[in-house]
Length: 361
Ligand SMILES: [Fe+2]
Image (cartoon, rainbow, N blue to C red; front, side):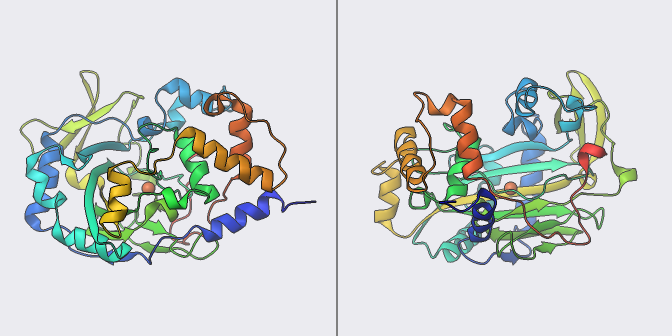
């Protein structure tokens, strides 16, 4: 063979994908006033839909991602977990002024500055994921990378993943420091696992219960996952979930939440019955020159540039291919890239927190 087999390359990539600096665990992340502001803003904010909607635009796309038909014995319900997703700040703007102190936060900005040894730090986003006890089938994932000119707002997630896995685009990556803060004290099941030394090496974890504790890291280059939360007798609290179910604060009751299908409330949950994560990110730049390249779009990626870089890498490795006219929508080329730059899952999991067999559950 003229080149290494795909499995070996995937193993090497899995070992090489490690975060910029060692992650740091921080306690008492937000002040009591900031914590109250976060929950207040979520409660009075808009109803939020399922996290799975971030990954798939429609139920049809889930079906398409499973080779066009559901595997034997499965229905769409198997892909629906009661994990919800919303925003408190986006594009550096807070969506509710009450969270300004939590978001434009000198303490978190200092952590970000230290993490990347950065001169300039720009808070970028604050989103949150929340849901009642449930099994987690997540074997560990990377967050979608943002590149100058290409991110999840204009580029399919599969292409961003392939770009990250290939490690060919690191010089275009926007350095994002993530402070992911957890609130979950109803159970000792439902911690956070992360692999700071790559997928080849043992993970670390923060065990539940926890409240207002965070890991500061570069999540696009570090496997991580929320663990199964609660015990099986606590699962299934939300019955009748659909792709379009939403959760919202119960009007007039700050400690209560309701899940709705249309006008029908299908579940009621107390704040403490929900595991919360608040995910703050900041863009980090070494200095003003580095910041200007991003701010003034002096060196943005485009689909054409990306495909040129892939083409020369594939050619270097003697992979036969023909560049399609529309590479973003060519199933065969997408399959080639995904296979060539595939990356495996982590090798080890904490004994206390195996991956749930959600499909079999
Ligand atoms: Fe993540």
